[in-house]
Length: 112
Image (cartoon, rainbow, N blue to C red; front, side):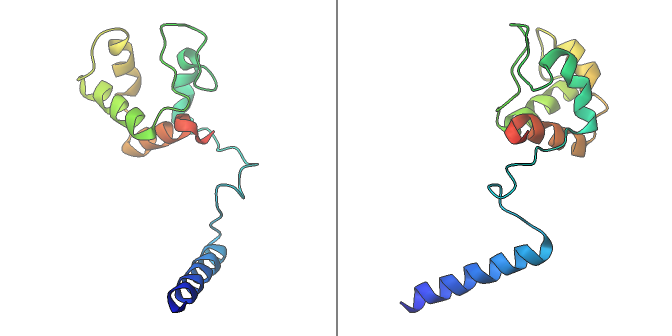
């Protein structure tokens, strides 16, 4: 019983801290759509405005794991990913910052 009370107090403290810091749960914030990162605008012409392209030979980005997307972008930046549209992708992503890569991966990874 004591353990349960301790955990309840801990959970309450976390909820208060989050409230003070303005942190909300994803469920409470579902009505808001994440704002598209500026750097992602260059992706839209091929990958579609929602990450689900109209062209069959263009990869779907919507819903991919953000870590997968980060790794793919970095592989294009470093020239480790070849074939298909790799040369085009290299040119598009070569100057993205680490923050841009993370923001794009997170946004297309399903947080839209």
